Image (tube, rainbow, N blue to C red; front, side):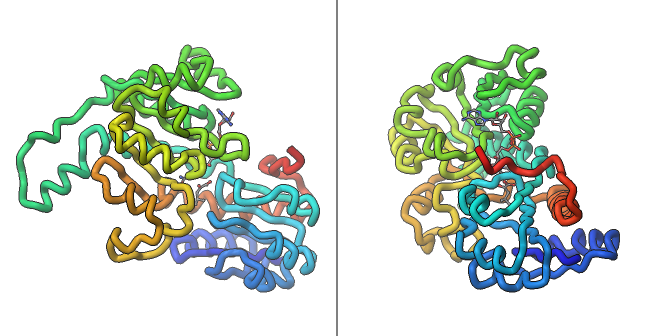
Length: 334
Ligand code: NAD
Ligand code: COI
């Protein structure tokens, strides 16, 4: 039995080696390349593939895997919005994800982005670079004075809430499905409009679907408080970048913490030497602002997360090959 893995990085290799040692009856092959129509044929001889990428999984690549007789794909991450379910169904694939590799990794990053904005850290850094060790005008705000609107109270959103409560922030939440604990605490508001009305910080923790693409648009922003902060550690396409830029220009939005961006694959994962060389004008516009913090889709990137991503994805792929039905199979019929 063989599993072939795509996009394996050096930092994943120790966990991968451990998994191989614990599963000596399984042959593991891997490449650093992502899964494309060209690299797909590297999986020849494997029964399943394990993969991780933010770029789309193309029908061409999946067709090559299908022709190699591969039926099982296990992603090492949470979000599966870069798959077209019709392609998976047409070609008879079963897909698993890693639903809970470390919600804390993303939640901690989210709250850090908020804190860096509230305490104006990028502006202090700029002053520091100029040898300026003074206080004014970079006066900060405290968490306990904030009302944070958490959109999505799944695994990550709930950890964000817990951390924020530790800092003394007031939390309001919105989700299409209510979590019992969050419900008991009375945190839910009935509509996004109500959440926008109350929140001094809005943070996104929902998956991306066709139905919520650009949910943060001109209209949503117009419903928010003046001087709101926006945090997005979920998916770039949830936010209309033009609307965000307009909101920042007008001062309606006081600042943004963005781990994900629309069209991020044009910029992330590469070295540009200077933000002046970024080949995407909208991202460059955001990157030049001291009230915008951009991180390269790295909220997940911790030692704990990487280990769990490798272990769970390989365990799931092995289970599928053995004819089992792991609980993390994605329902691609919806
Ligand atoms: P989850 O499935 O546990 O929670 C998602 C929540 O969103 C659920 O409670 C669901 O009911 C709710 N939801 C779905 N659609 C909604 C809508 N339109 N409006 C309101 N609520 C809605 O997922 P999670 O583990 O909390 O992850 C959330 C998202 O974070 C993932 O889908 C992924 O896109 C993103 N993510 C980002 C990183 C990163 O490194 N930046 C890492 C992991 C996950
Ligand atoms: C996810 O797990 O969904 C992420 O966004 C992490 C990234 C490595 C794809």
